[in-house]
Each structure stands twice: as C-alpha cells, then as structure tokens.
Image (cartoon, rainbow, N blue to C red):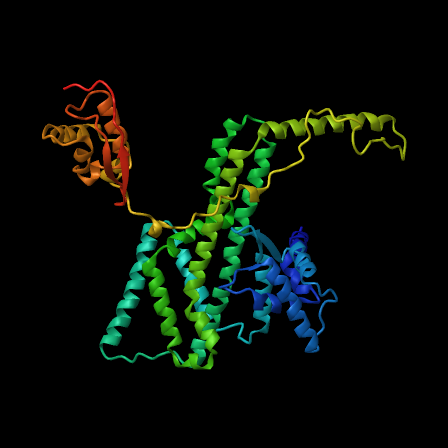
Length: 485
C-alpha cells in the first residue's frame, strides 16, 4: 500500500492550520500589512486600546487610497476575530492592562508572504554550499567511530593548511563578487527571519504546558500537600517538557556564549562592509547588522515567559483550595446522577420548574458590601517638613519651665538671711534663674515648714523674673508658721 493516504491526511491537517488560514484569507494582504506596520522587533506587544485605534486608522487610510477593506471597521471587533483565528493573542500587563501580540501562526504566514514577494533565486551556490557543509558536519557527528572522526579532522586540517601556505606564498586572495554576496545575504536573511517565529513557538509551548499543569492539578484528587511539591518541582522545568523547549535548552549554550555573539556581530558588520551592500536600503542594512538583537530579545522573552509561568503556577498552587473544588465537583456529579434518573422517565419537552431565587434564604447575614481594592490603598505619604522643625530643647530649658527649685533657693536664701537681709531683699538678690514666679510658691513652702532660719516671716516687695526675661513685682505677705533655726 502506498503512503499517499498518510500524506493526504498530514497535508489536510496542515491545511487547517491557522497560518495557512491567514494565507488563504481574502483579506490577507490587508491583515499582514497592518501586522507588519504595528508589530516589530522593538514593539512585540501593543496595548489593546491602542491597537483598536490603529486598526481603524489604517483601514480608513486604505479605503481612502482605493483598496478594498473588510466591511467591519470596528477595530476591537476585528482584533477579537483575529484572536479567535489564532493570529493574535491577549496577554496581561504588569499594570493590570492587556496587550496584543502576534502568534507563531501569524509570524509564519507573514514569512510566507515575505518570501513570495521577495525577488531571489531559489537555487544558488551559497544555498547548496550551506546544505552540503551542514550535511557533512552532521554526518561526522553522527558516526561514533574514532578513526572516522580523526580522518575527517585530518582532512580538514590538511585543507586549511594548504590554503594557508598558498596565501602565505603570495597566492591571490579574491573577494566574493557582488552577485555571490547578494545570494549569501538572501540566504542569511531567510534564516534570520525564521528566528522570531521559532522563539514564539517556544513561548506558546510554555503557556500550553502551564495551562495543562493547572488542569491536571484541578483534576488530581490527592491531598493538596501531597501534590504541591511535585507540581512546584515540575514548574521549574517547564521548558524541558516539550520538543520546542528542549531545542531551546540546547540553543542556550550558543546564545549564552558572549565571545561567539561578539564574533557574530563582527561578521555581520564585515558583510555589510562589502560593496554589494550599497544596493541595500538603510533599513535593510540596519536590520541585518542588528540581527544579534533578535537572538538576545528572543532569549530574554522566552526566559521571562518561563519565569512568569513558574511564578504564576507556584502562586496558584499555594492559594488553591482543593477542598472547595472537590466539594463543587461532588455537587455537580450528584446533579448529573439525578439528571440521569430523571431522564429515564421524562418525556420530550418536559421541564423542571426552578425558581430564580429561593423563597427564603437560609443564611444569617447577606453581605451587602464587597471588597474594594481601592479601599486597601495605603495612605498618601506625609509632607517632609523637617526643615520647619523647631530647635531641640535642652535639659536646662525644660527645668526653667518646671516647678520650684527648693534646694537651690533654700541654700541661697539661708545664706542671705544669715547676713541680716530680709526675706524680700534676700529673694531680690538671687540669680535670675532662681527668681521665677514659681519660686515664690517654693519660698512660701520653705518658710511655712521652718526650713529657712532667721527673720523669714517679714514681707515686702519682690521682683520675679520670668523664663522669657520679663519681670513682675509681687508683694510678699508676712508668712506665719513654725519658724526655727
């Protein structure tokens, strides 16, 4: 039996792919042109609201230029239809918004259109040489025989040595002509253009594995603690679970070699230094020289997608309530069983009456307010008024605003009274810091309790000094009490 039936089945599956559906779409030129204008290597993602407006603007521009465009001119509706066709995908942003990005199917379709619209020779010496060199290299690596490997290395060394000796002896070193360089440049551009689609397929494979792991976890009826460690460990190795991921892991050894990438950049600049590059546009030259940025950007995007997938999976597993999920599953299964029993006796068009709301809710309290994330926002920061801060107080300043200093006043007054001064005269001769108005209360306390000797009961005019330096006169009355030495 021939292999035609198998080939037809394989081709039919390929014909139904999203990439070919875009190629066969009657609006493919319009869609591909919009995708090429909006998305670039620097703008991998575009905010959803912005893309809706851009699509409407470009359709209006095409209609004014006389081109046929879809009848539906609503940018949001078109983007949603393209997303359902698997040409676009919506991804969440860190600020809570959403953005569109091209799928690997859209990138493959765009590459097909670019290849068909680009004028180049399908068969060239450069392409054949590339194929022959690659086949020879992989044939050598496929053979585990040591003698074969050594013989291949010896032959390569002999060829390179002979070429070196020829050049060293004054042999001619001829640079490739413009036509040959143009052929090689076209082959390299074809290969470089395939890189974004390859990286995107790795990202989509990671997303599929992440979603499958979440579904598997939901379906797992084992205790949460038993399966949590297993799934967290698997999430750290998402890339190794798909063919695209394993291929990417192998490419990391090349993409992580800085010396190899630096040599790659130098080779790109050397190719553009050839005279044939004068026939290229400025954009073509810049895009070719910056081909290493495609590698770096693709590597960064895949690693970020892998890190976000592992992080979101870990957060989901740590917060997932397996008990509630199993309770809902049991309720749905019980409902399905009851439905099967009812279907055994039910007639066509029979219905089950079901009120929209129960007659009486069997709950103690019905929540009327729900969580509002805005209410959880932290309070605004206080203004920095440190430059308006008053001078710090010292201990002496605080003491001057406090109560009477009985010990110092008693000592000073006692010495003055011993010299024959009256109580008022003795107080007026005290230092300013001991003549505060509050000291008069302390003086009355000392005299009434007999802690000051001499003629301490006689009154008179005293002048008190406030802490701010102002003075005030008081009449000191005659103080009676048990006065003794």
